[in-house]
Image 1: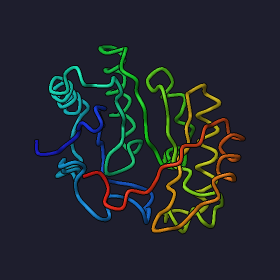
Image 2: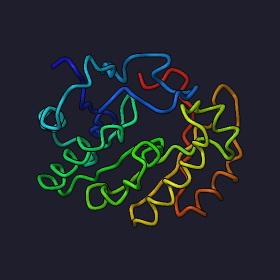
Image 3: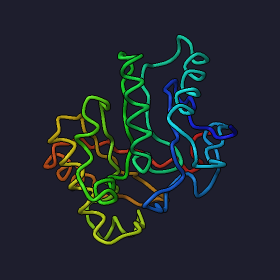
Image 4: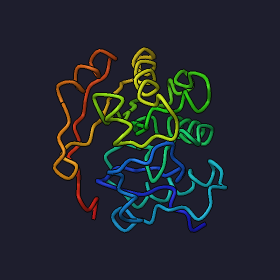
Length: 211
């Protein structure tokens, strides 16, 4: 299979499950390039099984050797929770075979809207940390930066963050600061995050992405 489903970055293993996304963020890396550190993340096909992901995971883990930092992150050129069943099966396999590996999801927080139910309880015990892209302090700014494909997306994101923190999963929110010189109200984002039970992470925009 030509698909890069699993890759190594900063000595962590990343899992690239889909190129589909319910956002089209103006600062998204994939708007400008098709790779991360030489790894081509545009998939040739979305028709694959968890066994394909696990096979690549084992191969990348073997190559990583002692430098591996014991963290597996579901994050690639798309929204990983759009492949919920494959994600759960893969995370379950990791937890069963490598319980020392921390599992994390980087998500846009739209999953409950997509599935029309709270999917967070299904992740309990499989995922150690969830990082949700808050992206902005207001709905108007969120729509401008994230360009979601449905209305009232910002409220869905905040509700998802609350569901994660309520479930006892370590929850982090993220914003991208200094995109082409644009500054966000970091204090407002921090307060929103704390009120929802999460800790804010400020990510500095990388103009050319990872090289």
